[in-house]
Image 1 (cartoon, rainbow, N blue to C red):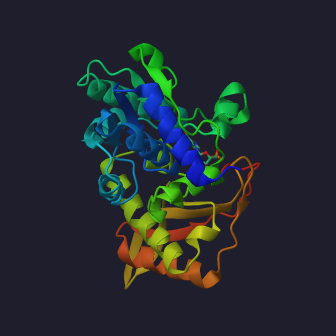
Image 2 (tube, rainbow, N blue to C red):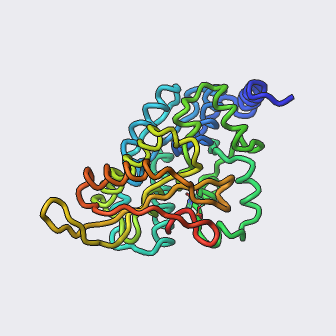
Length: 317
Ligand code: XMP
């Protein structure tokens, strides 16, 4: 019988056997899969696992530090890399969603390679691939890839001459979470909503810059914190805030304002392929809207996205 405990024990023994005293490099994302995979590797080979966590400047508010702290708490040998300005620099003037994805993906690989070069003699690349990713990468012409090129490091191992190790290759998401629980990974990581690789870069419609990221991070933090406070976070599959490239008129005191708008998105889904908009309570939406408008200078309007996928997508870009 499959249990998380027996899986973890087996996996650790197998990884020890397979990797021996060689070194493994791994990029972590802050998500469930890479964290669970890294923790299994850590149990097997300890500090011969060298992890990187890149700040691309497109993470949620405070997330870089929180995630790094959790990793250190888990005992992972992790190096944080602050590459924010590099990403902002290269994203200057770029408005096309696919062009932004390509730049973000390319920079991620460049940053990773530059860091990896500091560890010559490494033989392995660790990845948090799970079973559904294995199936998806077989059907490379599936809609998710042709409509939106998802962030991946597909070409990296070949280029760097690394062998791949994927401890979660045979597991489904719920099994990964159960293994994570067994390994005492904190719930804030295990229950975290999916978050796209290009991050806030595709939730800022149009050109990305540091000021817009700050604006969106502040609004989004109010939304996500309130989802938790109202006990709604675990009831939606994914939620996020989108910064719209429009200004609209408002009044604040006796002043007329002309500022930006954000859209709130929350969906229920099984695998992200189809999605229903979440019927969040009006009192919750009212609270989030007034908190954002009263506290985030530069935003005077909040709207709620009531589109189903298909034909809409979950993200706006
Ligand atoms: P869409 O917008 O296609 O999103 O309905 C479906 C799921 O995929 C995520 N998503 C991405 N994830 N890189 C990623 O790693 C991407 O470029 C990307 N685009 C969308 C999205 O957040 C949702 O969970």
